Length: 109
Length: 116
Image 1: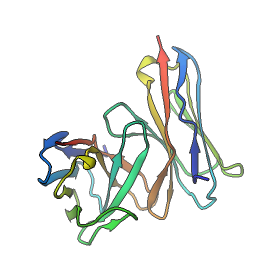
Image 2 (image 1 turned 30 degrees about the vertical axis):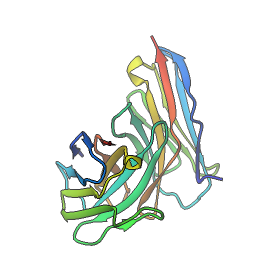
Image 3 (image 1 turned 60 degrees about the vertical axis):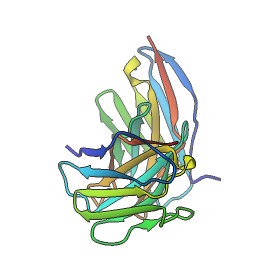
Image 4 (image 1 turned 180 degrees about the vertical axis):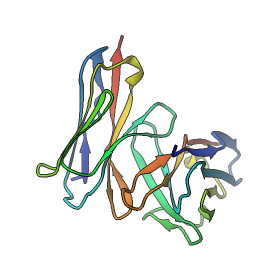
C-alpha cells in the first residue's frame, strides 16, 4: 500500500463545474498538506498548504483536511479551461514531501 | 515571491557527455534544495536532498557518482549528470524549501534532458 493514494483520473468536467480532488494517506505522522498544480512540461506550482484539520479557502480553491480519517481534498469552484492540469497532493514528513500520483483534470469549454 | 529558476530548460546531448543543470532560488535563501526526476504521466521521484555547504543525501537506488550535486550557496544548487546515457533522458525538476517549519517547497520549471 502506498503512503499516499490519489486517483489518477483522468477527470473531465464542463466549464463552471465544482471539482473535487482527493487523497488518502496512511501515515498519521504527516504534518503539513499541500496541493500543487502542474501543467504539461512545467514544474509544479504550489496552490495551497495547510496543517490542521478543517478548511482553508483561497479564491476559487478550498483545501480540506480531515486528520481523523486521513483524507484531504481540494475543491475548485467555477472551474475554467485554464484549470486543466495535473493536481498533486503532497504531505510533509521528515523534511521531505511525499506525493500522490496526481489527478489529471480537463475542464471543457 | 518564492521563485525558483532552472537552467537550461531543455538540453540535448550525446551519449557519454556530462550535463550540468542549475537551480536558483531568486527571492529567498534556501538551505535545502531537492532534485526530482519525473517520467511521463508519473509523479515526481525524489533523487536527492541538497543542503548548503554539505554533501547531498541520495535516495535509495540513485547513483551518487552519476548524479553529482553541489549546493555551494544559499541560492544555488547544481545537478551534473555524468556520462549520460539514453536511459537518463527525463524531466528533472528542482525545488527549494523556504521554511523548515512548514516544509513548503517551491519548484523550478524543470529541465528536459534528451540523451542521444
